[in-house]
Length: 159
Image (cartoon, rainbow, N blue to C red; front, side):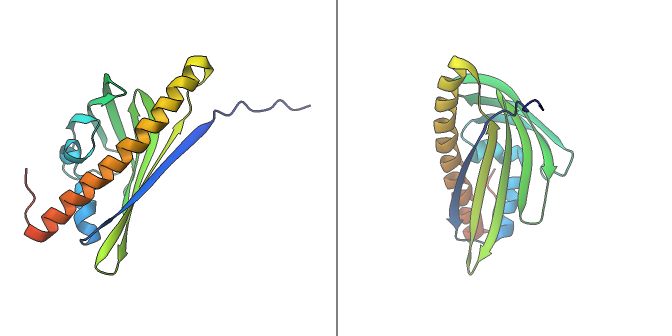
């Protein structure tokens, strides 16, 4: 009788927002690691290129569930319409963004896939983490779309 594979459970958190601008304006913000703290609520600081490419690793500090942690994002894919990264900030996550043209605006989608913590304490942490990731993702997309729309209307990227 074959042994069952002990595959860790994962959970997926997704959100989307509409930005009243061209997709390339949103993509510019997604790929500029130096600006991630402006729109990602947990990120305190980053050290990385202004335009990430496949294989780049961005280091930084974040505040996740009230804990200050060092983190890193390994850039996995940079398709024309987004970004896929492996993020490690206390927990490991696969984070992806996709930007799709819709008439005179664009749809920005974000997805986080993470391994669910195990054990009794892990279940409590998993519950808190999932709620926090949902809130974080909504806030991040709100900020990202506002920044992109502001830049689109002025043509200037403010530092």
